[in-house]
Image 1: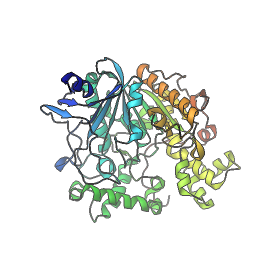
Image 2: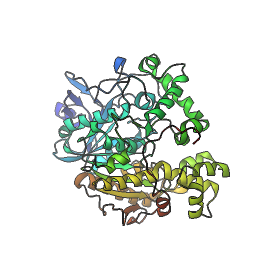
Image 3: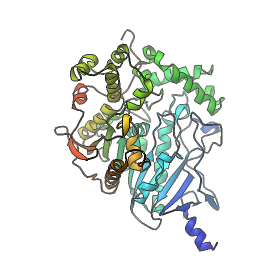
Image 4: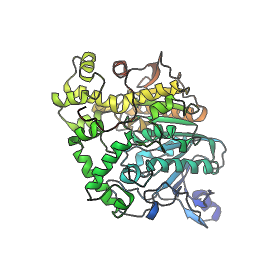
Length: 485
């Protein structure tokens, strides 16, 4: 093969750390497994990320980096903090940059997930970046002697790398949009409120924001419970002697016990994960809702929304719901049992259980984030995905698959799926390019909301009954239950 032909198939770019060689895959150049920070090992295992070290020569960037420690993983290579770039045109200048932050209940993150492939979105005209970041104990446990929110500090480090290197991939370092779903959206909400992330992105798209942010007291209790599974204390010295896989197994064991810990932990014990960002007063001074209402991110444009059937998949996994379980769930909401029964008089216990869990975990935190951002002087747009195939409906994470173009539309919805996917992807790309997604900005009077369905429309926020129930609630920081409370 001639040298010029090989260079076309294996493009090379010079980053701030050194030259990387990727692959040309159809119309998109792809660079995988590029370090954005040093491996978090030794004294750095539970520390904030340190900038990547430089290298000589050409580094292969054709394979995804090793998985961060998580369920189903192994104690493999520890150079976990890598990212991936898809570019439609390495010779371009000023393309919008879209940085994907994956979800996974703050315990999973694998950028090699084929559902999170950036090729389709990049082919539509953006430089797309995804990353691995620390999750579980390594990324989110409150550990004495270590900074909190290490996983989100990793994300901020990746964004600094993007700012330094976007131009060599054809992107505009001054036009970066972060977008993410579920725990990725919760991370974006935290990044909006974090001083360490100020100025690293111009726009944000938060898809299904979880309402779970923890006080240091609650986070310390969670971490102490996990450490006790190992006969250890939740300190740097206490946990450093265990292999990453041992910490993962300990966290999984506690996760299985969470339904029995509601009295000790409060509502977080009803969530699918024991981990969430920690409002520590330093890395994260405030929870996102009061922080945004105070104007900390008023210069960042925000698209935020959710799917209609956020809790449908978990409801189907849960199976039959008893009246007692429904009442327990309804107590999560303001005037829960009375308010929900009045609004939905014919609902079954299973329907009420699904509905209130969708509201308190994802739907209302997302809507309230828009309210807070507008109150703080920012501009926001809201959406709901109402289309969904089969019994799962418009389920949690479906919007991510549609935007990224990784849903098997031939099996899941056919032409309807294609229409919704094209519309969402076009709107996301328009927002990243110009700051205008294509519908009216949110305001607290008319609440215009893009509703994605077989016929996509913009209309007042569609979940009005739930909005009214939660109108006076203030999302913020979950704390330990008060004695007797």
